[in-house]
Length: 200
Image 1 (cartoon, rainbow, N blue to C red):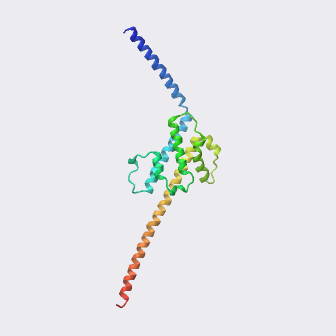
Image 2: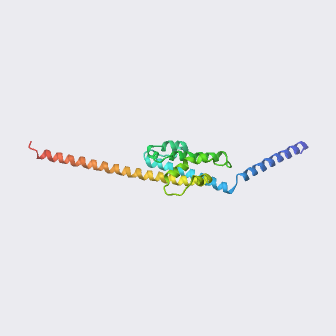
Image 3: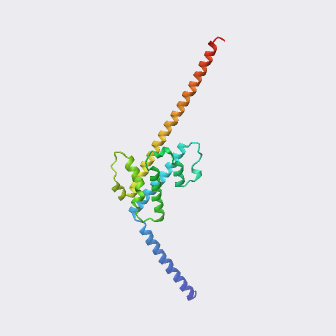
């Protein structure tokens, strides 16, 4: 091997080693166990909310077809779920959007802190709908990952409540339809019986 080839290989080895050390240092700076746990909580919260939103959409629209095959992104899913049914819960959809913004923020930087303003819609939902639960704005600001988790669980519970209300309403509609059918049948019987009695 010529000295030029040896020099080239040595320079390549030095460059690869230098970049590998930078990569490992970067990896270590992003491998803070506490931060990794926070990232895991936030990703789990986001994925669980996304799953529940898909189920919610399917439950409220049973004739919709496969939502999974539509491959909807989170914002598209939110626009489909947005309805007067959910608007009775103040800031719920904004809370879902905020959770998505937190998750998207992690995709761009694993180390930047989550700004409290990004949590605000989730905090508003928690503080306005969780009667009797000791939860402070200060706690939420100091524990963004825990706030995302608490919001996700509570918001999904609110979706389940809405699904139960929907099922009750659908059951009542079916009962009313059956009552109307029975009334129409009785009315027809009565009219048929009246016609047979009347002299003709």
